[in-house]
Image (tube, rainbow over all chains, first blue to last red; front, top):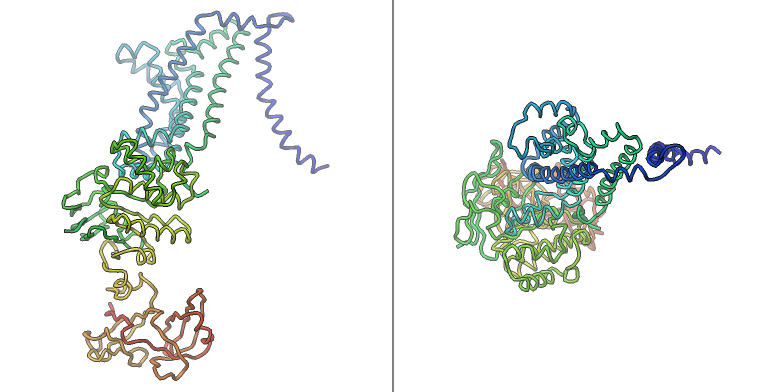
Length: 260
Length: 353
């Protein structure tokens, strides 16, 4: 009796945990379909999809996510490359900087940014300004993904092997390093998407109408539409996470050496 | 004119000198090993030749041209590393073609050369496999093919066998030698394994604390070690303390007895010396044998297959090892008394420090 119970306990525990996550989602889903009284249907979704502001905010967030990914990778790939190749002793410093966004509250960051609210017109006063804090927010995830990818690759040996064969830095980076970092790069990109799609504090305080700000706005005006939108945003984040998991299992790209 | 000339190479790290002005020359087609314990500077010297480290003094001359300041990518040297260094995103063939692609050779020429090299290392049928589908030994062979594909002016091997298991190591070692002789490429090989160095090289350079302790053919290094460090590092030898009894006659005194050692000639009578005896030069016989120089008791026997190593406690406190064919060693029982002798040419005599 006790043995059977012991065997079932982990499953029961997992099941409870699953319920803890799934019940609120189901409730949100059910509520988003509620049309008042005992009527259910897709009215909230239809109303939502007919609002141009939804699409504007969604496209803005997607655009910011793409810009954040590009800026983040342009800054971080060479930095992490250099860290691994030439200055591994600075790793603790990089590690420390990379977790600062966890320690410094976004509200403090945004206060600092508004104080420094100067720069060229195409940056300041446009949503592009958000890309800077977003790169910082995504730093813990992107840095770690890239660092792990490069550590697995044995960058120093790869670099020296390609140099001894006559390759320059360009060939090294584009033919050797980047193709072997696809998993890390995709992971970093998808995590960035997940973060940017859900970021609220910066956009709201700097008065830009991103997807998360729009969810908040809808939440104050229509409860069922807000539920629908929450599910939609959850779906986007969830797909990004699924992408991270799937690309991490790709195998070949991070596989190196070793007898089989 | 030597093909490669290292001229007074000096290297310091954080104030510590790891190479003290190394001079070394390699002839065209020569296979030279840098042998020494870890930290002796052999890898640093190789990396200076490869262009991965800059010497703090001295220069590197290849085929008459000073290449000390030339970047690694423009030195045209093939290199095989200790760590597996194949590019994981490329097949074996693509790895071999990499250097040719960089040199903008035509695809047809790349393909032909890759096929030729993969056949040379015996991996023609594995051309389309990725590194993770190959064993460690196969990966190192592909790395060798990749290094040779560019027709390097010099082949550099940085302990390429040390990550492999014993059997594969011996196979690949012999294969490296065969391929080197077939291609005639001048080769610099770094290893801490004396057996590897002795079996594969035209010349062995033994390094100690950033200096060359001795350079010579494998037979010279083994048979005529220049000092006690080389003698200890290369091969096994009993190390007996004694003094020169008669320099003119070539006699040294061990355990109070005068024994012949031709190499004591020319030293000073009465000088303290180390007498080194290789196990295979030590002869054993029944007590009281006519040739006997010393007598002792068999302390232990270790069977190594073809040979058996016999440790003898010599009367008077020394201990030495004799290696004899296992077929003959059966007669020498543990605990039995034996007489010990050797040919007067056999002992190496080095002045004690």
